[in-house]
Length: 204
Image 1 (cartoon, helix red, strand yellow):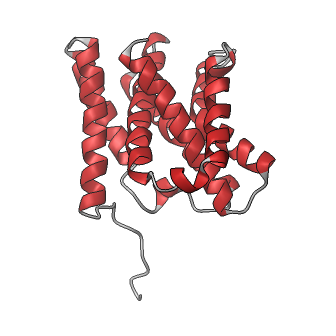
Image 2 (cartoon, helix red, strand yellow; image 1 turned 180 degrees about the horizontal axis):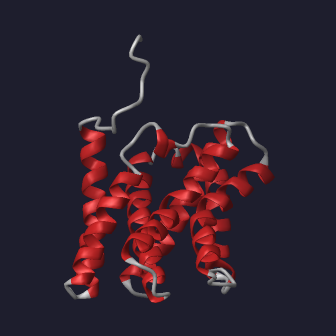
């Protein structure tokens, strides 16, 4: 297994755990939590593949993703009190995951012959749509719209990847540089409480 495959599986598992934890906070039952965990893990990739016409979508072409997601959900239920304490570890895997999903989405779009800007949109879709679906189903305003620098980190990282790709930089270096840039941006945003400007009423 290469580094990207491992990071892909780790990110998928982290997304599934994230969805399950969000569902548990809303007091959903086992089926509800499983559904939210699954949607969080595969939602972005599914939308991306459907837009690209890449069917059957990636996660149903083999058993690996199915097993990883269900295992992550089951472990979250069994070891909930311990997993909830591992927020920093989950944050790292989640951030690695969005970096990897951004790259995978862009690479697939480029293979399909799409332009760099559209490829960046496909990468962003891969990375954040699962989280948007998670928050929407849990009746929350999606995280990317009001709190952390999340989608912005993917856009910056994706732009770096496209620039390196344009100059024909070695693929593995481009992938690692992209993931590290996304991790760095998110860490700095959390450390210094950075966020994009909000639209507010001038009279407030």
